[in-house]
Amino acid sequence: DVVMPQMGESIVEGTLTKWLKKVGDKVERDEPLFEISTDKVDSEIPSPAAGTLAEVLVQEGATVSINTVVARIGEAGGAAAPAPAPVQESAPPPPAPKPAPAPVVAEAPEPPPPVILPPESVQSSGGDMEAAGPLSPLVRKMARENNVDLKQVRGTGAGGRITKYDVEQYIGSQGSGRGMMEAPEPPPPVILGSESRQPAPAPPARAEAPKARVEAMSAMRRKIAEHMIFSKQTSAHVTTVHKVDMTKVAKLRAKVKDEFASHYGFGLTFLPFIVRAAAEALRAFPIVNASIDGANIIYHGEINVGIAVALDGGNGLIVPVIKQADEKNVVGLQRSIVDLAARARSKQLKPDDVQGGTFSLTNFGSYGSIFATPVINQPQVAILGIGAVEKVPVVVEGDAIAIRSQAQLALTFDHRLIDGAMADQFCQKVKAILEGWSEAVL
Image (cartoon, rainbow, N blue to C red; front, side, top):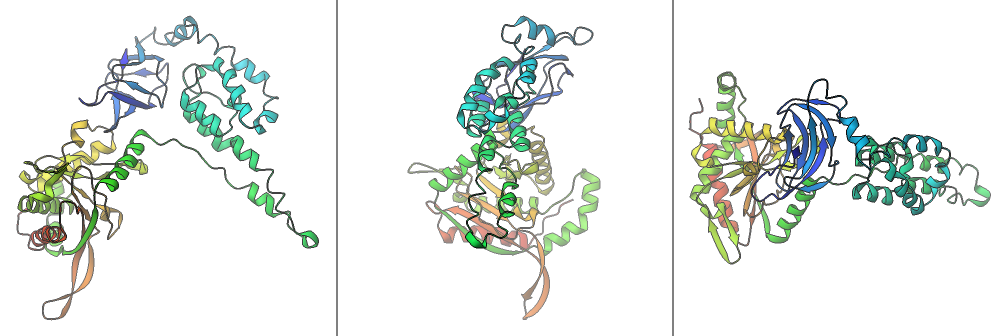
């Protein structure tokens, strides 16, 4: 049996977001089998044994408790192929999937009229589709909200079950009932009396507009939304911005980056320099590394810096944490950044990797942004945003103009605890360390 794993002490359930194998597929031990989403991380779950995926018990989009059996793996080899078939023939519900194809074909001529009908078509189709396997509440809800006749949707799930993906594909290609109901509306706008020379072309243009696509938020997206709203409602957000001359760091990086990559196997970016400077500043101003608990201030003994990582494809944002960041040099920080970012994007992070942060950084400069106002990562009281490092003309000593590598650092702080003067002193400390950089890298 394959069960929903426990991804941390505080995790009691998980959402199965995607099956990476289909019933009948061969799987190797430790090969990724399915993806789950919890309120902490998204992860790929490996197969506990080698064999054939014989049965899927939990469909995509379902949320179940830990240790719930989600699938069964049969023996590999000659017995693997027939394994799925007996499962469908022996269980009472599945016998229906066999007759299902025939009725769908037989009823094919009937759908056109019902599709244009409102909710009635959804209700009637819901009952008919039980023959093709039970429908999840999410599928029923999507069908109801989009007036989709489920008799027209081809199920790709186990036993011909209709999944969320199947409904989305149908809505995108065929158009939902709601979209079809809007089609007849264009003619009325032709109210031009004697001047109705060429009003007719307008309605077709509107009718050909692309259909809207409905997609449920992922568990991670919902948690991000809740966390952002909670943070805005909790903290008194204020942002202060300081320009930093990164010329010394830029020249040092340019000088050693090739040797660095050759020696360590990964590149050298500006980020570890800023993390290093921030860690030093947090030592000097421990209140920026604190948090609030009711009417009490918690001064944390460790400096654990979270690094915001944008997931591939715009699929969310996660903040893995570098523990004891103040004890690492530039090489150690860069190694930690590369490791955490890679595991975040490959869904290999563990809940402990995203817990315990006391301060956060977000590097929006990697996407070309020079300035932004980041949102505090609760229950922390500050977050440092890093803009792009750019070469700009700057007035230097003696009223001369010189080219300097410059970046803007934006510190968003919780004004309930940190005053503007303290926030600016913290930024000036970070600025002084970066502008006077003298620490060796290699």
